[in-house]
Length: 420
Image (cartoon, rainbow, N blue to C red; front, side, top):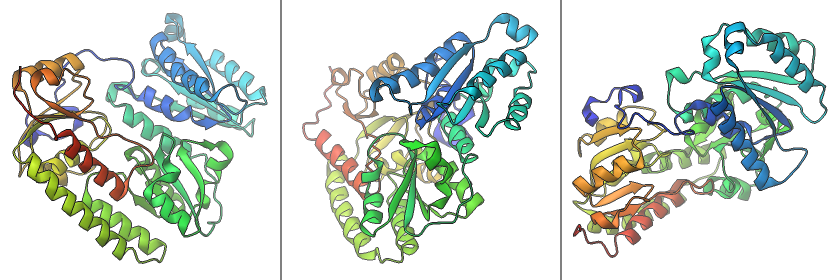
């Protein structure tokens, strides 16, 4: 398929039929979010492989943070063939009642894998019944894997679900929250430092580093910062529910979007950000021209997983490079505007679910000048330069844009595409 034939993520052809646990399924996206919510219990209900890999993510977090009463507790409940045939309602209700009696949790999340879709078990009815008997929060998150292969959709679904737990509080002046950050460092990001300098107080980072009490009071924030694509839907929900304005810094490599974000943040804080924008834009233009001189006419394969693919390819195309193949990950551009603009520069092939060996085969055959993404492939053998744009919670805005340009500049210093 070529870029001009693209109509949506689901119509992109799979380069490989085989899939590996994790990135392909929204269940693992949900697991990657809920494991950060301290003081809760997660019950994974599904087939053996599903619940094993989902619980594994939670155990990995416990290893990093050590044994703590606040760490999320997880249970893996394997569904048997008889459960699928005769149902499991009474067993699930009994398990939930046992968890409600425990004093070390404030909320219980029941997450079901796609196999549960095959039976007509009314798990939501059980949850609704128990909610009338307890003050603890109990939530059901069903996974519809048959409809998608994207774990990012699971992340968004989990964040949207958690917004239900928030309560309605009066907005506190000079407070802000960060949405979408899943790693340490978000509090030191460019816009976060700006707000702190103005005397704003950070009240929560969803999902990283937030407990149930902070989650409940998230509506107190005066401003929300979206630092990763997965936080956008949650920001929109909080805006609709409580009227909290949000500023998008999730479009890492779109200069226009970054400028607009800083203009909006300036307006919300009643501060003039024009001078800062002009200074940073000038630095970027000068650096871009330096990079353009070295990259003009160079071809590239694209394979980043989290960045918006068309936006990133357009960023590279404006530097004089030519996209010849795009391997998309879980993240996709939110509008078609960027794709249409990218078509003015090139019409690359587009694939999804391309594993390492398949990419290596294409690299060997076509030998692009650059490979943008996870560069574990045997790039040197093909005379290809590898560049990976890192996703760090503390890197957004102008800082990320400049660092990306510097990465391209450094990677190109000793460039020679002579092949084998």
